[in-house]
Length: 278
Image 1 (cartoon, rainbow, N blue to C red):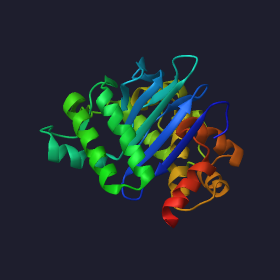
Image 2 (tube, rainbow, N blue to C red):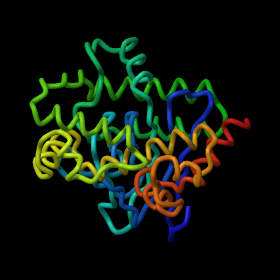
Image 3 (spheres, one colour):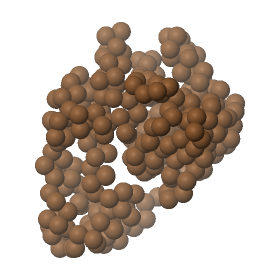
């Protein structure tokens, strides 16, 4: 990817279904607040990453892992002038649930308790997963991934909290989210959206932020990028994806996609196409 000293590769290995892979070095890169459908297991090799998680700045340095559960809003940036280098695996909830059921006694939906864990051994396991995937060593990649996830669940795992009973504000936020998902390409303005539910714009803004960790416009951008990823996975071009999800043009998709995913949509699509053609 472009950028002085910065590089990143975001890819999939066909023999690790349900898992995204990333290897990157960032210096000036800033990830805006966003979420992932999958778990984030980021193994820091050099430098320091700072990411805001549940309103707190968390610091992960060499030998540490940054861990984020699915659908949890967070950011990301360098914590030192030289930036940070890391490798990451993004296993789906289904992959983690399968491993947890086989190797742990956690009841309910498994997840990570703390967002940062110092464990150089698991850091090395994550980087070995990426190396095995690069080399086409399916047996090693699958084995090492399962060992890494099992170890993290045993060190730092627990049942994810059950959703609290919805308040009136949370119910309105959920209805607003459904409207934004349905009208992603042509969303209503905040005032009209609030009026649909008989509330004020600021009340809706507060309720939505409380429920989803970000205001509606930021959530919509995140949702559009998620949908664009699905379209690119299915073979759409970046221009086609941009039009379908509601971005004004491809440059708008490029900017938001790169700020959330870490690589431009064109590079992301090329890696997906390589897997399909293999």
